[in-house]
Image 1 (cartoon, rainbow over the protein chains, first blue to last red):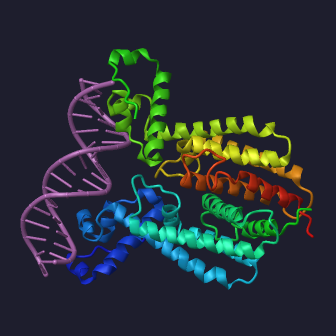
Image 2 (tube, helix red, strand yellow):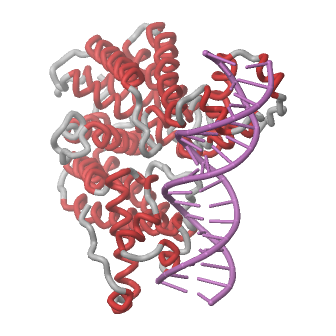
Length: 213
Length: 213
DNA sequence: GTCTATAACGCGATAGAC
DNA sequence: GTCTATCGCGTTATAGAC
């Protein structure tokens, strides 16, 4: 909502290219957060920057290229965040809880990036090969991580770790979607679904430990 | 892809209004399934029907009105399906499994309706009051249903039923999203996530029964 | 070379006159 | 039902300014 001051061409030229690119991406994210991922408009971005629409094509080849940059950025920031939070914890329970909460918190704080990463709400947008490999890499890393945690907690053959891992993955995504849909403004820890990560973690830890009495 | 034969205005006039409305909705669904919910085009619908685009406004006030009709139709069909499948089962485990499988199968068979119902991929589309109440009604019914099943299975105070119900709801949505994203063409029962409903049901039934040894 | 603005094309939804 | 017109969109071509 903060209206950018219109700049003269001279003033704008003083900025360097990278600043401008970051600026475009930042404004794009703001608009996606306000009106939804699919509502992004190049005309609107250009208006905000005080330039004409075709001028944007100096920095991005197309609208999809902007989506692509944000898609990739999303996975990179997600990895960074998870790497910083999860390994801190001691017990498997705390690790699972941290993984769920980290996933949900990232989505709550970056709903624009998250929609772009998980749902695919833009017709015709297909990530570039490079961005696709970033995303597959991130998914594989998350997957291996969860599996290791669950193996640590496993005390019997009741449920194969691979299947427990996929169930946990589904739980994280489902909780996130429902939290975003019901309480998009509440931080994780509050709200009908935002407060459930401890319960969810408990559910999985118990499943790996349960004796088949 | 099946090209409709072009009809003369006279022939078209012989059809009654309701037939035409159903026709429009059916073609709209076909296109949404092919290219995504947001890719729906009134021009394309009109071409397929052998009429001009403005003529569609005789049957629907706007593009959003078409979305709205399908949104409502989705919840009605979903309710119908669940009502037919779940209560058949005997044990809580079988009921939970049937609920998960029914949810996933509906989404797999009607991905267009499901996207419209759950995700909200169309910028600016807000369901009408009438459709919104249909949807809230459906969600409330599902919720009460799951809660009753879980209460039947509960053997201790380890987890409040309301929270278990919401976790189960999240699991259903997460499994569905992941199945649609990974194996959209495989029926429920097959595929990495499509085969997990029995495990998921087992997870929840055990959680309600577990003694806190 | 790098960044602009201008103009124009084709497409979309939609409103109004007939 | 049609045809015409308006508006906004992403995109391209072109030409001028630094």
